Image 1 (cartoon, helix red, strand yellow):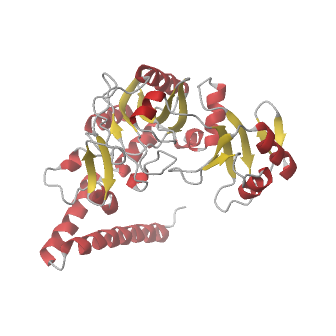
Image 2 (tube, one colour):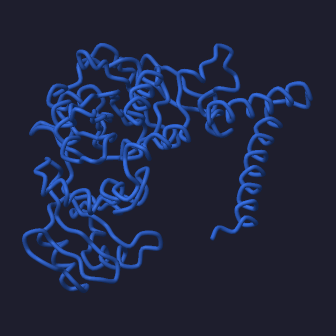
Image 3 (cartoon, rainbow, N blue to C red):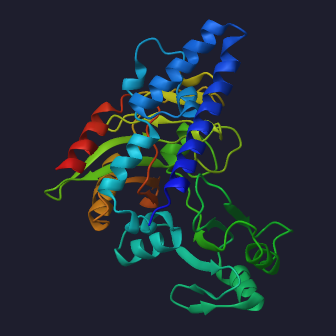
Length: 360
């Protein structure tokens, strides 16, 4: 039986955290003007009650400064998660959220992914596909040194936003299979890792943005009641600075986002999220390159792969796919049953499509 006191305490703590967050933002914005403070608090309350935006989320999107009701173009994480729960049963979301399960499932479903070299389990036996189990420092050190290519990537199975990813270059003098084993086996946050080959960007992507890290396309799919698959939105994820991964993490990495026109696969302007909210850029800040009107390489193949993968992941009905375009073809890098809301453009039509699907 639920404890009503415990429920009341949780609700009170949640409201206090919301108030503290709104108060911090309002104090920062008011510059000792009580009228400005009151207006910020009022708007924070309105954005949460009507649209579900948390104060920090509204600040990142620039909604406190907005005068044109731009909150109607965005969707809050809270409202989107409610629809994702309705369309993707929570008990099945682990298939995308655990990378070890995800890549094994993709292998069985014959969905192209970067070659899976092994799965490492902290303080337990792992395995090498096609070769069997691996256990102990000696076997893992031999695997890393003899069976892995010159460069490979190690990802936490349950990592998010690119956290905890290692890129291993065996040509470095510091490389040691034993040291890598010890690092993974005593990792303070994660207890399982997937080991994969590194892929290289398609030459046309490298010409547009010459970064070493893999730059993927996020494609958001919805499987309709008649089993057809719709693509709701897509965007390219250009890397900025010295980053090796293209993850955005709500703007924390400094990487960029670039919407793709669904009808023809051409790129639009770049977007970056900073202290003043979402900003449009007409050129890459590192190279000065214009992205707008450039074609996305292998666009038709990317869409075909996203739709094929979506059909094989039923009953999960909406997934945000990260797909790499390479010289050798297209590959699924990740699937996200709880993909994040779009921070640019107009999310109203995709949200309506999700809402209709959830209530049919």
